[in-house]
Image (tube, rainbow over all chains, first blue to last red; front, top):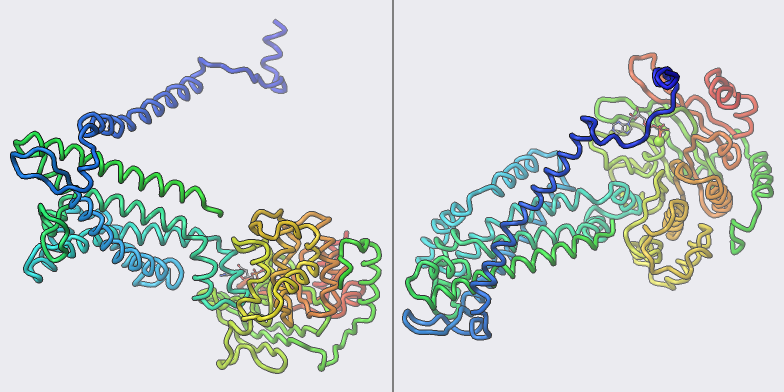
Length: 295
Length: 287
Ligand SMILES: Nc1ncnc2c1ncn2[C@@H]1O[C@H](COP(=O)(O)OP(=O)(O)OP(=O)(O)O)[C@@H](O)[C@H]1O
Ligand SMILES: [Mg+2]
């Protein structure tokens, strides 16, 4: 009786004990369980792909696959050294084009004229471009480079990949530059830096980890692209000659996985594993660099 | 200069300030004016932020800017070294004479102005580099070709920070505490020996001890530099400023425009302010 009275009393001490069956608590428990399950499920595709690749492709990974050329239809053995070189070469070309381009554009967008018409339009275009189906980049490079040069080539492949990389590099670099604290930028101006000095000595050094993260992610994506290369670099069974059709891991997988020869199918699995590991390692590198951020 | 500010006790330095303040004259000798800020109108876009403020800043003295929030103290202070040029829409009408030269003249390079008129901001803002490099930064910018170590040590001693950081000069400036960071920013600003040092509420993020250290430092600094400081703390203005400028907001014309109400030797201004506004403001502060 007296207990009831004291519960009605407004000034009674609040009850701090857990009440697991209150609707509020139940809701919270259900929600956190649900999100936990979804997080686990989200990991399943990556791990199942990895496990399958390790199982199917792992046994074919020998030294030979890294340096040998593909074997002919009914042969055994062989490798895809040319495809690895081709992928590295074309991704390298794409990076050489897109990284300076993207970073310079990002400097303009983030620092020099963030409010200007050009900046608004450019940043909108970059966002649209980053969602562009990659095959369209291939079609564009086909029309712009392949038809002009008269032949499929590693250059055309590199340009197609660059088109895909530019928006990623540009948008992440813009973000990284904008993340540099405003007071630090003011301090640079206050010390008597010209805008160029402030950018080179103060802002870029702080933004570099963020920029590198973006570049690595863009490279990882470009390394796995198939569609744009089908239109531009095509494929080749020989070592790299930049003016001619060029092999790449992605297109090799696409071609060989459909062949009726067990050796080629094994090579396709092994190439898939190499490609996934490459992307995986690049992602780890970008995370490691991202974590080193000082600000 | 070798005796660090931390060694002097607060009491003795206040006495020193009181004496210095007593000798500060109300009508300044025109020869002694290093900087003559004659702001007629200062705009942010269409917004008239400050009008009709004539603030002469005397050499080797500390000039304090006081007044309610939003009255344009920072605006005027930052106009003095053209920091506001970075803000889109900013317009300054008037003149700022620095050794007889109008720094808003078309011929003048704002970057050069900022190299001669240093600034310490309200929030400590060291660069993300080592303590040593922070201090050396301005010297390198000015292509200084001498004994860098010596200069860095001198600046750090001048900012009463040397003893605390001499063993970790390679550590990042951002790893210091807030008060140490602010003193690092002061060291960075005085390393290049600018003629004038502008400080916008340099102690607002600091505890009372660090505040005292910085106040003592300012009193030492004025032997070599000319200092202008914005402060919300009346006691601080009394302790350090030789001259004090009181700003207020004028809401009569529909806007919220700041202007200089009166300016004079600190003791004079606090003891018998000429304007009713000043009286009310000081009265509110001290009652
Ligand atoms: N970058 C800016 N853009 C537009 N208006 C501004 C800008 N900076 C300041 N103002 C306006 O100018 C007026 C004066 O601001 P200022 O910062 O100079 O005041 P203050 O006296 O320093 O105030 P506080 O004591 O709070 O720092 C205010 O009304 C403010 O809103
Ligand atoms: Mg202010």
